[in-house]
Image (tube, rainbow over all chains, first blue to last red; front, top):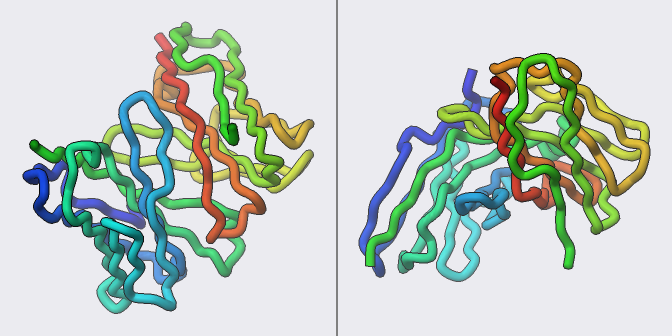
Length: 115
Length: 114
């Protein structure tokens, strides 16, 4: 049972345009959400996060939006750059509960930004 | 440099031959965890440790063992590997294990069990 889903396995965008990566979750106990970025032959690296008390968090070119009623979050990258090409994982945790740091990950979306 | 290291990075072995994948972090983190990544499934937690001598099962613990005798090290042990344990493994650590703590991942170990 996949509690965090990224339904788009891949996304291709042109350099300078906006990239929008989507993520849906089913567990209403999740209250903290993160995006990780992964390059080939490397481990995932933290990109940006959002608490369930917010609906938007921004960090430079990256913005995460959270729609709790729809159990949906999205990552916007503006403008997209070729160096953004990577696999993006959405993850969720029950930060206020007893899940002890466990992150539940989505399947990942491969983003390709063309020059 | 703050980092999580794993060894080996690549390993090909045969069914039933015991192996250990090491993980070490130099950030004095209390929380450490092991994940496996499989196509179409994302990363799934195998085991985690809140501190020295404190470990617990994650979502997919079958066939794995762990130990936490020192704060910096968290080895993953496969006593009798099987082909369904062929996967990409990641070790991670965070300061305290609270859900909002940033987890830092190692570079991964690609394991093939023949």
